[in-house]
Amino acid sequence: MTTCYVTIMRGLGPEGRVALVRFDRGNAVNPLSPEAMRQLRAASRSFEDDLETSVVVLTGNDKAFSAGFDLKDAERREKAGMGLGEQRKSLRIGPSMCRAWAEMEQVTICAIEGFAIGGGAALAVSTDFRVLARGAHFRIPEIALGMNMSWGSIPRMLQLMGPARTKQAVILANERIEASDALAWGLVEHLADDGKAVEVAMDLAVRIAAMPPIPVKMTKTTVNRLAGALDDLASHMDLDQFTLTTTSEDSKEGVAAFIEKRKPRFRGR
Image (cartoon, rainbow, N blue to C red; front, side):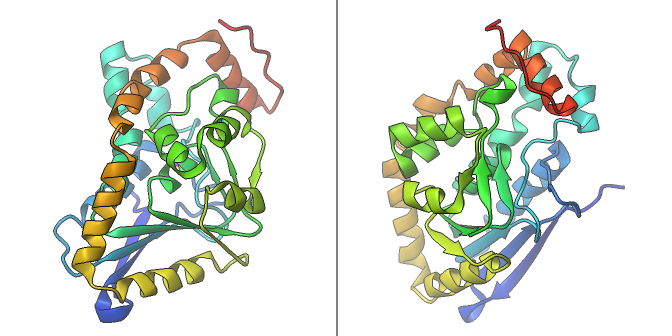
């Protein structure tokens, strides 16, 4: 029996136009297993024909938004020996999940407690707005694991932060991006006291939901299409870059060092 990791509450806020989507695996890291990502993708797609909801708040649990892709997940280990074609197919779930959230008609707000790491950060930047608890942080360890940052997230971060900060965030963010820096860089739009991220996000959702829904949706679509007009050109190779980098010796070393809790030794091969 499949465990349910995602719950949806609809009918909140003015005229019932706000929904709250909560991703919670019941632990302190809230990792993104393939099944969790399928459920998150299904949650976003469940709003496709929903004419009543105009704002969706996405959050994790009280300890974490998400630590990102679960490197210890059993399904991932089972697929490690697949051929290239099968690997590419299995790896589509991450970018597909993020794209589903990015393409929603409803305005989306991500409420983050604890941390958003790797794939968790990629999911967060797929939403329209981000509310970060003051004691929370971002971290993007993919390069430190010998991989590329994928899931279409680099163009989205580029729109938020500009080229230099995006390079700093992706190349050096195995180091933490604390809340104050995330706000200053434009990675998030609002800070909240610890434990209050959902509350602040819901306040913003209520303000947006009080506006006429149809022009709000039209405006979001127009802004996103203009800002992201070249995104496909930049991110279409994400999947193949990820597949390629995970076959490198550096990637195997990076993942092993992470699991063994030691400093990696990269050799550029």
